[in-house]
Length: 184
Image (cartoon, rainbow, N blue to C red; front, side, top):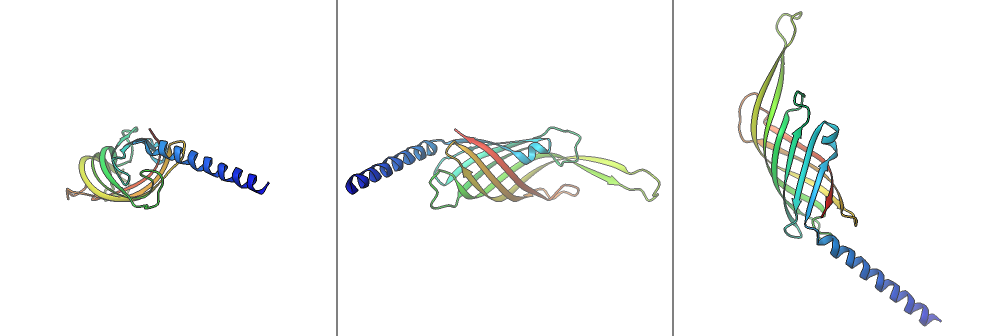
């Protein structure tokens, strides 16, 4: 009876391990991912990202941002940002999963709004709108989780610097994203 019990347990564990390996192989065959930023959607912007997993630890991608409200106080109206990522986790079972470091370039067009208060306190404020374009290079750090159903969730935080040092244009651009995506 004990031998039969041991044989049944061994067979069950063997089939379980094989099925897990099969599901991991299916997930690791997925080399493309498309994502939306949940924070940007709440802020009337669309932040769409495509990522291609070229190797197990490296990926290439690009992000596209468009502000849906054109006369908003938001600085960034449109941007396109190619990036390269290096995944740091050594023991990850999924391709491109875990902590990562990202280097990015961003071209953006924006609008900066200034309010000028005249010396006369009773006079109304003067609103000045200035359009600009910027070339930004930066780095970010993040964490990505991937489920067996190919859903990905990632948090990204970083900072980029404007390559042009022009007065009245922002010098630094922060990057904070909460992306939800699908791997295919």
